[in-house]
Image 1 (cartoon, rainbow, N blue to C red):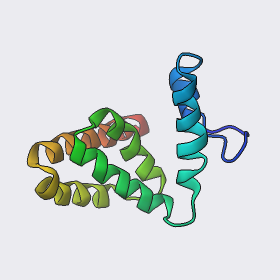
Image 2: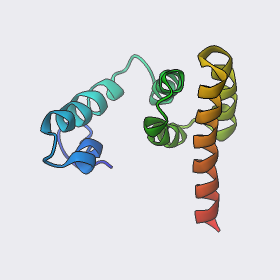
Image 3: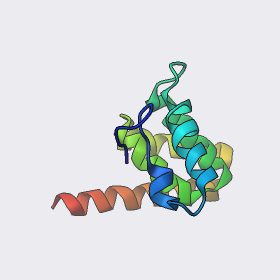
Length: 116
């Protein structure tokens, strides 16, 4: 998802939208991931947990698919994610917590199948 470009060279927006939505590509790749995610104020691990909390609370399962997997890359363990989603279920609503946990289960099962 990254290439050698300015900053970290994030290309997720470009990969998703190409020339279709240049503004969305710019703000996703250059601002959000190359700048905000690279700030020193929080670790990527912590940014992942905050992002997952917000997306779970809002019921945004499409974006959760990416961010749960990204959190795992950023050092959040599967057990920590399960516990975070359980905690969130009580504050963000049980259906949102259940939906987020279903997304995580799918990610983990997919990875387990690929490792076989």
